[in-house]
Length: 359
Ligand code: CO8
Image 1: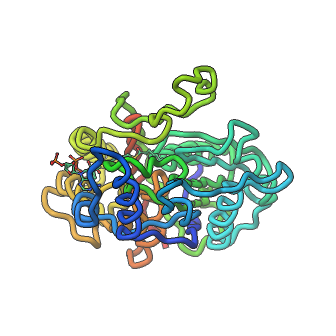
Image 2 (image 1 turned 180 degrees about the horizontal axis):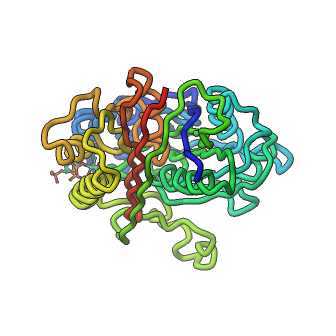
C-alpha cells in the first residue's frame, strides 16, 4: 500500500464581494413589494450565522431587486465552461505548490453541490484544459463533496490505481440560492478549491501532509433539499417552484447535525488511536454550529487557532469550506501536528479526513 499525502492546495476566489449591508438592502427593497414579507437585518445575519460578506461570480444581478440571481452568460460549446475555468485556476495553484506538472496527474475528481450540466463531465473538460492523463469524473454529495472525493482519491493512491489525483470543488452556490428567501438569502458564497493527493514515494512536495484516514457517513434527511433536476421539465405546473432552489429547515439541521458530526469525529479519532488534534478545519456553514461541534469533541470551548473560521469572509461555500480553512490555516503548524478536515451537509452527509504534517 502507498502512503497518501496532500501535496498542494489551491483556491480560486471571485472578484466580487457582497457585504451583509448590500445584501440586506437589496432583499428589503424586494420585501417592500411583497405583502407579509418581513425585512431582513444585518444584525440577525451576523448574529445567527457569523457571516459578514461573501464572494460571488456576479454582484449586480444578485443585488438587483428585480432579478436577484447572478448574470452568467451561456458560453459556446467550443469555450471552456465557467466551472472548468475556475477549477483550472484552483488546480494550477495546487499543482504549483506540489511541484507537479499537470501531465503527471492520473485522475481528477470534480465534486460540488451544483454541476452546470449533465454531461460531458466537467472533470473531463478540466482534464483536457490542464493537459492531464488518465481519467476524470464528477460527483455530488452536496457540502461533503470534497471529503468524499478525497476519500476516493486516497483509495486510488493507496492501492496504486493512480499515483496522483486532483480533487476540485467548483462551487457556484449563488446560482442555486433563493435570494428572495428571508431565511437563507445570506447563507452562501462562491469559491473553488483544489487539492493534489498523491503517493509520498516520488512526490516533490516541500510540505507533505500525510492522510492518516478518511471516514464517511450518510443518513437520509429532507431538511436540506434542492429539487432541481432533469425531470422538472416534464411537469410544467411545478417546473419553476421555489423548491428547485436551495431550501432548508435550518433549526432542525443545526440540532441534528451537531451531535452527528461530534460523534463521527470522536469515533474516527478513536479508530485511528489519536488523542490530540491540533486543528479542526470544519465545514463553514454556521459559526455557532462549529463552536458546538468543537466543544463537544474537545470537552471545552475551542480557540480560533484550533477551529479557524473563514465563513465571516466567504459565507458557506458548500464543499469548498473546509478546504479553504485548511488552505488558509495550516502553515503555522509544526511537523508531527495532526488536523482534521470535516464536512457536513445535505444528505445528511459527514466526511472527515485526518492529516499529519510530515515535514
Ligand atoms: N433577518 C431577520 N430575522 C430573520 C431572518 C432574517 N434574514 N431570517 C429569520 N429571521 C428571524 C425568524 O423570523 C425568527 O423570528 P421569530 O423567533 O420571531 O420567529 C428568528 O429570526 C429565528 O429564526 P431561525 O430559527 O430560522 O434562526 P436560526 O437562529 O436557526 O438561524 C440559520 C438560521 C442561520 C439558517 C441556522 O439555523 C443555521 O445556520 N442552520 C444550519 C444550516 C446549515 O448548516 N445548513 C447546511 C446547508 S448547506 C449544504 O448541505 C449544502 C447544500 C449546498 C447548496 C448550495 C446551493 C445554494
